[in-house]
Length: 323
Image (cartoon, rainbow, N blue to C red; front, side, top):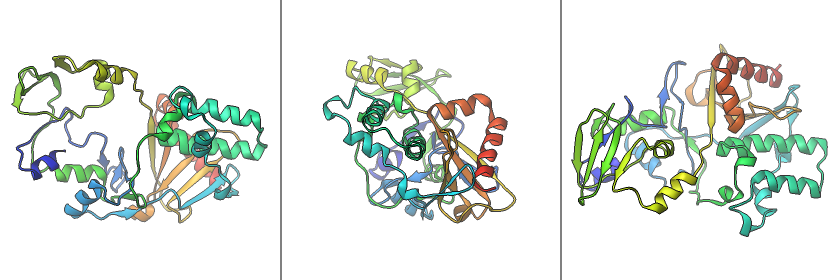
């Protein structure tokens, strides 16, 4: 937003609550390479403003698609990726469009299974697909996710891409020419007189003609930012009703690469569990690094156990896949 406004000739001030810019875009180099702790992909790069921004800033853009995948079970045996069902598509096709906003993905899948009970191998593949493509994509368990969520939005075209230097690095680089004031969390917005006055937690006020507010949904729900006058009732209802999922990443660096030469690989155990989806960072970073994704209750459980337990559990999954 700041880049677009500046390109249009507008003077911009950015008030940033954290000690860094980027928010969910956060690149870390503790493993000896740039890894994105938050946002990673440019989904649908064709015509995407992030693609244009990356090229304007001289960043390489590299293809990294989940379509290039190797699947293994918990005995290290290959699993046919073509046999994995499209659970999102099945949930949509099996649901009543008029009830999409009031019925969960779990309800639809359960009704479908009751109508045609799956075989044991089909159940295992469907459980993997749910973990990777539903929980992992939306950050929520099927019981917490409405079918309507699968129908939302339009997608841009093109194979998914990543930035070897990191998404967070891109945002930091793009923000170098702005008046960015970090450690400046805004506690109040006064827009009662036609302009905007933003007050930070230190009591400092910044007066502007307009404001673009991009704080997370959780901040708005917690009421940590007061508005005068209050936001319209339609906005407040939407803020109150929206939910947030959890998507967690676990990065591991090894001495050598022992996994397949594929962009991604998946873990298909006999019993549903975490560590279903993995990203191979070796081709992107040149270092022996992998990243595992967990969403919904799997992510919450891993976070509750702490990082050491997560590393042990993730390593056990890798050992099962690649004995």
